[in-house]
Every structure is written in structure tokens, then in C-alpha cells.
Image (cartoon, rainbow, N blue to C red; front, side):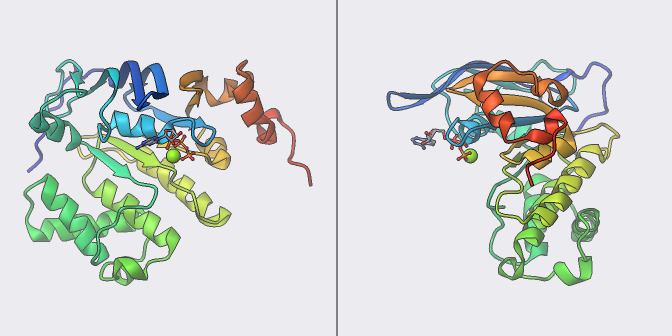
Length: 278
Ligand SMILES: Nc1ncnc2c1ncn2[C@@H]1O[C@H](COP(=O)(O)OP(=O)(O)OP(=O)(O)O)[C@@H](O)[C@H]1O
Ligand SMILES: [Mg+2]
């Protein structure tokens, strides 16, 4: 049974918000007062140089890390129409309720040992009380949506999967819980360009695949992958020296006046209508 009450017209348009978010390790600041709002149904890519704090930012949004100061607020999809809930110091029960509607595709997939079916079923059992028959149906459906050969992959062990297959399984596992928000950390790192291209399509398809209630999902992606930006044309949030140096459309990213964005863009010539050097 779904924990959702009936959909309401007054659902907040904001999915996530940070207010003056700072995160330091010892006396070393990594995030220096980030104000960010992620709207419902948006695709947002968090980009920036290595070490700029993208993963730390994601982990603060997920509250896998405690923030040093500031606030993180999130929509509570179990209580439609309620104001954003502060998760920075929320009780575990509140956090769990909010997380019921989130799914994370981690960089290294974080698949548990066992079969593909075990992986999907375990997560579903954690989320909802469903009969085994329904769990199997959802597992098949989500694997199929991720363009996997269901019969081939369902009983495969985690350790038998190629990198591209494991990523698809991680996405299938995420989508099986029908999340409102999908978070990806570096979804294409370590994959070859062809497989990466398939993953871009999959992220796009999963974003546009409506939830059971008909609503669209919100997608937050931490990425280095410029081809992914070209394909998805997301809202781009660029971190530099612990601050947001660009926040806007992909189309305008080319005109960003932050030097760090320009440096990033010099390696991204297609955005300027030029072809990469042969
Ligand atoms: N647990 C930690 N303890 C101390 N420092 C940390 C910790 N986690 C991250 N950092 C530091 O925070 C900074 C940002 O790290 P983060 O992993 O967010 O970078 P990133 O932008 O995700 O880089 P990459 O693109 O290489 O993944 C780095 O200098 C890193 O060393
Ligand atoms: Mg990272």
C-alpha cells in the first residue's frame, strides 16, 4: 500500500532548499553559505572542478553529512501540501518519512551482495509492505524500463554484472520504489562513451516517466560529464571555492561570467557552436 494520501492541488513547488548552508571539515571550509532552491520536476546538474564540494553538497542534501551551519529543507511527499520540512536537525522518524520518496544512485552503485532480484526486493521491502508477487512485478517492470533483459539479469549475482549493467540495475532499483526525487552521484564515471550515452537516455527517460499518481519526478545529478549536460540540458549549478558561481539554464551557461565557468567551458566547445579539435 502506498503511504501517500490523495494528491493535493496545494503541493509545494519547491522540492529542496538550502539556506546559507556551510560545511567545514575541521577549520577547512568546503561549502560557504550556499542558497539553493530545487523546484519540483526540475533536472538540476551540480557541476564543478574536482574537489569543489559537489559530493559534500549532495551528502548534505541527503543528510548523509551533518551541516556545519545553515539549513536544508525538503518537501514531505507523505504530507502533501505541508510546508517544507527542515531536515538539518530532523528526528530520525521524520527523516525516514521524507526519504521514503527519495532514491539515490550512488557513484559505485552500492548494490548489496546477492542477486539483482535480492537488491530490488530488499529496497522495496524496506519502503513498503508489498506481497512478494507485487515485488516481483515491480522488479521486472523496472528492469525492463532500464532496457535490461529481465530473464537474463534477474537472478544474476551482483558480481556477475558489467559496469554498464550494474549502473542500469542501480537505476532500476531506484525507480522500483517510484521515488519523487532521484539523486545521481556521477552516474557515468568509469563507463565508456557508448554506455554513458545509454545512461544519459535512461536518466532522461526515468525523469520523464510519471509516478504512479501521475506526477513528474525531480532529478538532481552531480556530474563531471559534459556530454550528459549536452544531452539533458539541465539547469546547471556550478560550485567554485565553496560558492555557487553559476546557477541558470544550460543554454546560458556559455555566457556565465564566472572565470571558473569559462575555464570549464573552454573544454566544452560544442556549447559555443564549435567542434572539438580533430
Ligand atoms: N569526510 C571528509 N573529511 C575531510 N575532508 C573531506 C571529507 N569529505 C570531503 N572532504 C573534502 O571536501 C572537499 C570537497 O570534496 P568533494 O568530494 O565534495 O569534491 P567533489 O567536487 O565531489 O570532487 P570530485 O569531482 O573529485 O568527486 C575536498 O577537498 C575533500 O577533500
Ligand atoms: Mg565527488
